[in-house]
Length: 92
Image (cartoon, rainbow, N blue to C red):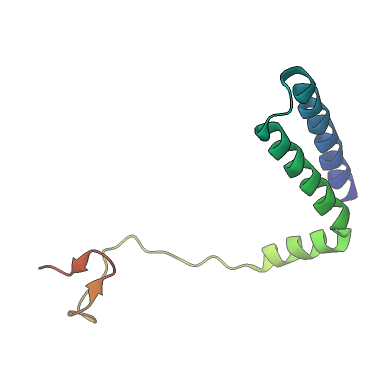
C-alpha cells in the first residue's frame, strides 16, 4: 500500500510542477489559484491519511454485500393513493 501512496505522491508532485509552469506562462488567474489550492489540499490529505486507514477502507469494501435490484415493473397495489413526489398522482 505504501508503494501506491508513494506513486500518488509522485504523480501529485508532477501535476503541481505542471500547474506551476502553467502559472508562470499564463499568469495567476483565479482558475490557476483554484487548481493550486486543490493540489495543496490533496497533498495535505495524503499526508494526514495513515496507511492503516487505507487498509481499513479496503477491508470494509470487501465486506460489502451487493443488493439485488430487479428490473421488473413496480407493483403499485400496496399504495394506490400515493403521489409521486413532485410530479402528481399515480394514473390520473
